[in-house]
Image 1 (cartoon, rainbow, N blue to C red):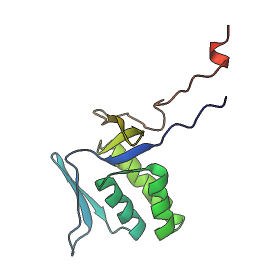
Image 2: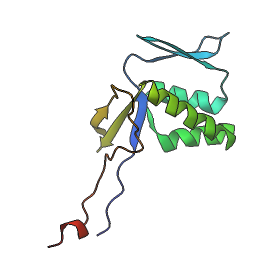
Image 3: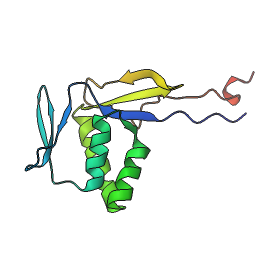
Image 4: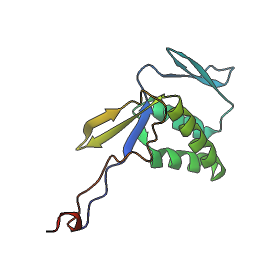
Length: 130
């Protein structure tokens, strides 16, 4: 039987991170240890940030938002910002199952790379053969 695909991680801003969108200034993130000015952003990136500030979204869904609004060139900017937000420990990663949250990880130290941490490792029949 083929292994089922793991559910995607839902990315969101960790508790205490707020997206601020003043009408006459570029958007910024505010958190208890500082602020991060985001500069002038394309519409798709703004939509992705709003999703992160709301209920969150899987990385693929964020990419779809950016791709639809900004085209392929916007994807590089999305991944740059996600990496930057991750390094600043402003993101949380939630594994959802059956419509609810199973586990949420909020990195507390530098060096956490959500792309290399094995969060899902289905057992295969080959690894358990006698």
